[in-house]
Image (cartoon, rainbow, N blue to C red; front, side, top):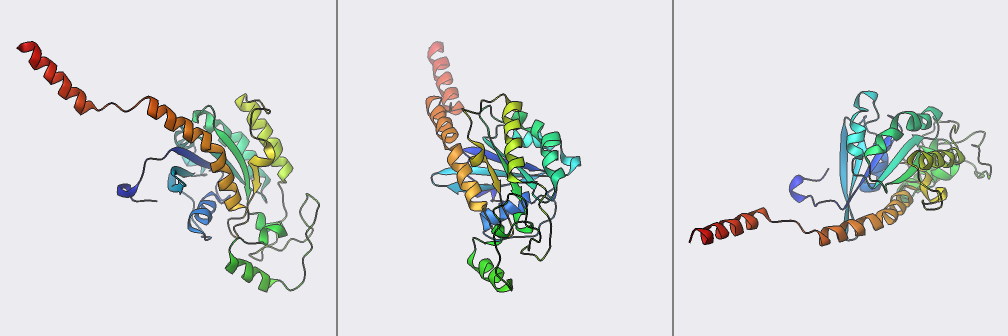
Length: 259
């Protein structure tokens, strides 16, 4: 988290929501620090400030634990984008997004953008073993003892080999995330034709290898750019009032009236 003295006022706010242990904090560390870190569960919330071109974006990480659930709507207040995160190897983590977390976004901006992101893809999909970091890619290549064939089938391979050596089966396919995105639009009363298409809003990622992490955040920042420009335009049309200057003017008028 940046020091308060060095912080700049953010142009927009992005919030990550999702159950505990889906890897929200790890996703943020992978994107912001370019490395994977095993982290403990977030308590309450934390944020990073991202400099994106001339703009500043605050990215909020929220706690998935049920005892902190009520804080979610507070963190979503005024959000320009929400990343609803699940674990591709845990069907319940997707169900929790709809049952517990979607209603928390009611405090977000009316034009808020919603992304549905499945993390831990490296545990179930051989494509996600391809790291964006050369050192991890080399390490992964060295660990392979035989050629791997990528399956074109949307369901997980019969014997997936993960980066960590753990073998898990995929419980949530990308089509499930796309269907959930459609339900988000209906819940929000948004028209599909006027909303970003599902193929741009649903991602599978791996915080461990970096798979699709940059693509996720860069796509999101491009989508929130209109919100940033609109907000800046509104601020220019409604400049901040200097209270000290107003007080000085009032005192001068009062003295003139007395004379």
